[in-house]
Amino acid sequence: MSIVLDASAVLTMLLGEKGARKVEGALAGSRMSVVNMAEVASHFHKLGMPDEQVDQMLRPLPIELVPADAALAREAARLRRHTVEGGLSLGDRFCLALAKRDVLPAWTADRQWKDIAEAADVKVVVIR
Image (tube, rainbow, N blue to C red; front, side):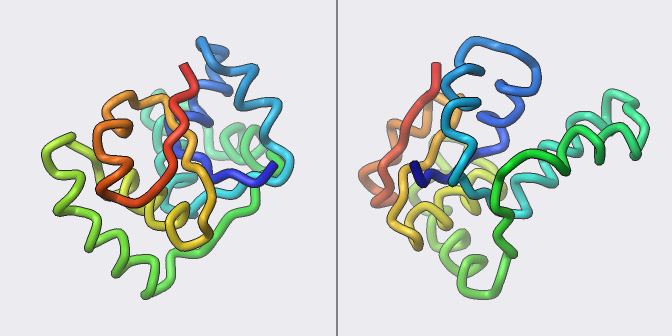
């Protein structure tokens, strides 16, 4: 199954929260913007986890990391008008932009994404 993962979905899985098994079952064939992976890594660095441990945890994940190129950045910027009311971050918009570009569903733990899915022209799957 090809999907685009938001940082919140990967964090849910890594932290063993509700929805973790759903994400685990979809990892093969998934992709994620490097911006969103930076959000995941930042979460653990903020908690004080050593660099090597963060790398050892994230590197083996079978997620295709997609570079943040100029076209993806422009789409993420355009999505701001649809996402500002929902409080979505720049990282959230990169996830949505990648899903839109690749015509894939975006998986997230953030329920407010459902409110902007149609305007953003992206299928959103809330994992919990």
